[in-house]
Length: 395
Image (cartoon, rainbow, N blue to C red; front, side, top):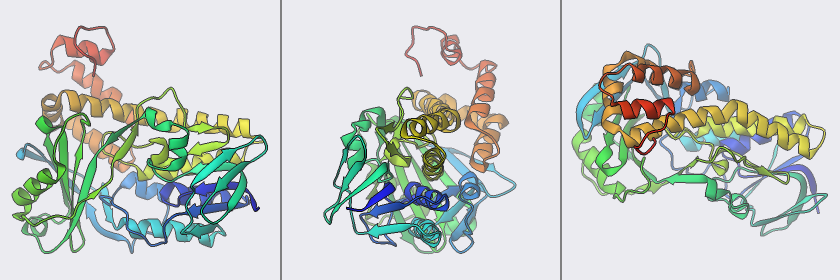
């Protein structure tokens, strides 16, 4: 039975990041990946500039289009655009991005067993047993980077701390007049009555269209909204083959995705931005934080404490702030849309977060202060924003 310092389940951005960092630090690590690479990954494929800069990879061969402008609409009306002096988004093929991150880990000396899926694990006082259909391994630590539907998070019952937002995407090839006229513009359409939003991203020789629910309790047929957007924007009504991929967002920030030397990373931990659905940045970042906590700690208890502290100081505040904005938009979509449309501060907020120049925490405070001054807002809502007691339901 082979023993490792750490075993990683999954080699998406979280697992590949952890494998690269742990290998660089001289630990004996094995990554178990159920798929063979390159493999298809359902994803919009838009990297924020913050994410691109953090990954520190040469993405020049992968970037298909750069986004300098985002166009918004409300029920496909009241369009307005937010422009940026530099690119705020970078369209890439997610399959190639994941493969590039895996290649970097392998070149650093990382070991990956492709086509080998974790089916169970058993935590013992001196080791963790990890079982696959092929064999059983042991390790000091187990890192779950297998996504929100993985066996490890399910076994730990971590799902009760997550909210799942259904999302579907479709990729279309072709020459579209809208994209020809606005080749560096992304389109975001809000459908508040249905609790949904949609987007169109220009992507090389075609587009990616997606729809997500920002109110998971509402029942809506996402495929119908994709067809509505494509007909309105692209004058196209084909039969779509959609790819579902629910977005898992942590909602209980009093809990931490680590227990008994098992660390949950990225989507497995629900470390996803609830406002714009950004997951790649937090996946790679959490992989790095977990690797550092393990490599730089004297014992498992210290490693767990260090990972928790890193989450508390570097990730949780941003996710909480993003969640506040998402909740505000969900509960008061018309007010939020008008504020984004009418106030330069909100547009500056959007650009700053995407570019990595501003934190959600910093800008959310500024947005709240601006909301206090807005005469259109009722006093009960102002009290909610201030955290004061009110008879109305809280945001």
